[in-house]
Length: 334
Image (cartoon, rainbow, N blue to C red; front, side, top):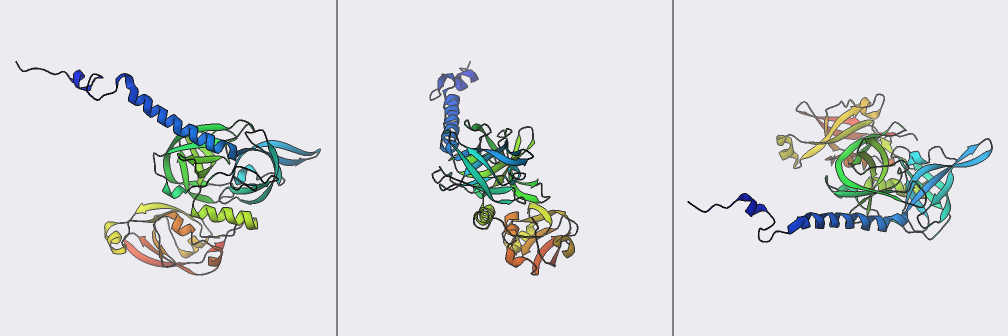
């Protein structure tokens, strides 16, 4: 009879080169823990707890509002617009080292759910901003907030989806929102969503359900908003009145245009420039103002103040036919 080798002998801990007692799993857990700890230690000094000032009949009072992220050493902080939406323009920011500083709201943009604050101090630890465009589904992220003032809150998870849409309190849809399964606790709105290197790639904004958190991305488009809020206190934008998402192009059109994706119209709001131009749900936008459109960011980059009231050609695919329409962006009211 031929010699038999049992599967257990091949797969068990005795196999040459294998690591006994689950050491590989332990090493993996340690690596994961080290990554999360490193991000937490790097960012905790840059995340503040906000107590927002409200006027009352008896004067002023401070209520817990949320969190904020320091973006410059000389006192600028970034948070969610809804955190300070009902404030009287200021409040107190507390840090994990026990320090507390007054702040004022420099500017808020409810359409992106971002706001910039300025504190009285000139010596803060600034976080490094990353680029959400480089994120991948499944990538490790760490959510850091400061709901309690002197003790930060840290949760970890992965990017579970990209390109989500988020309706804001202003009624506008924020596109390209990050979805994560890192738990977002009460008071974490306005806090940081960071990658494994500790770079801030999003501002935590909402809980979409059990185990689902949403964050406004830090990317080229939102950096422009942040810069305008810091310098001018507001961000003027053109708008079209549609919501969309990236979709693959049909193979024939992909070969013709030399690219693989366009933006499918998901929703058209009544009474908006998109509706006036005749855009419909399921239209696939492939070109805007003569420039290729492969994702929502390509549209958002063109919604600058110079386009307000100016005719903009849009090329679409509808039911297999290529059409060209004309959009006239309007200014989005605050």
